[in-house]
Length: 153
Length: 340
Image (cartoon, rainbow over all chains, first blue to last red; front, top):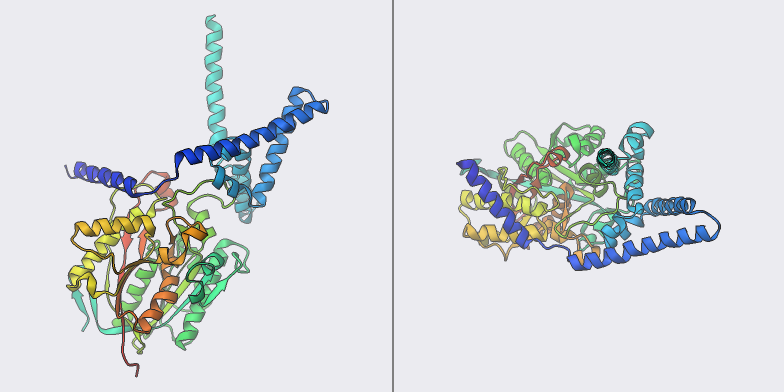
């Protein structure tokens, strides 16, 4: 009984807090994410086209594209420019490959002081780790589904 | 005679004088509205050290030495230090205090630690257990981000309700040797948990505790809010302030005219992009030592209620989806006439 009452007041308080707490404007954030994310993708397309124009095949050009984008993201993370970009661009900087690179480079910088093994070594994937793990798991599940469907046909 | 008031408060028979207050703040704090008030502004985020944690220790060490210097005493005159910070196992305090060679009580009250330290140090002096006692706390933006949130270079968007951890340390020396400011009473805070889980909205997590401690203080001492020139909370920020006003209104109190918040005083959000305000153990400590104490000494404020507020969560409690309980410690500080 007491518990139920507490839960109810907690919910009421949460509702009230939500009402008085200011939030970022969603349309503005979406517009900025579209702009920044779009520009990163345009840059990627530019690298892709340039590599192909220089004689690379589609797969090789794709490699160059990823390589250069990751390098730039890590460089900008080290120069402390990427966090500023992310503050403005939000998900626009998070979703492309550059966001992933940032999430690996940032812990590497922060935990460097704790040593090569227990610092960088064990903490470099603190943010990116879940993405890798569940990325692999979900592709495994999808593979299994695909395999089963192949058998049915 | 010292006197117990109500269930949670103490009125000291003799005032416990604040002999000195010292503050050392970081660069961003130095650029804020209180910049000219600080004793020292350290422009180097690492304070000449190798890690954020060592930097925080260094700031604390300097604040302690400055407070001793201002009080005109040596470290050997101190009977005990009550010190704390935000890092796990009070790391910043431990490494600073090893160098000071003074008996120590290490405290953790999250951002309310300065209130806790002042309360306990005053009790020690009031009980004649120490001729001189020190209250000392610190926080550092980078060490706190590392302890509780993300690596600094990770790109993300902070919500508008988030607060900015203050880099800095504040120290006060307390004694029965007279001065123009004194602690005359304390109200020990209870842990109050309204079930909120959003650690990026700490103001909302702590406001119920602040409300509880302020109401209890007013009831225990039989005072009205008007009897305090200022009621100054630690780091509720703009969101927490609004909630505190609403909660107090339900209890029949209106403190809008005399309320200040250290977190809102130390930064100018419009220019410094700090969102709801400053926070951390260092926030209320440096604002108390640099801004509040001089106004009490000058007599501009005769009596204030200083209420540092803390959000008692840890990395683990956050990960396990626990709520964020709040606490607030209240200290009554008064102007004293005629120093003899």
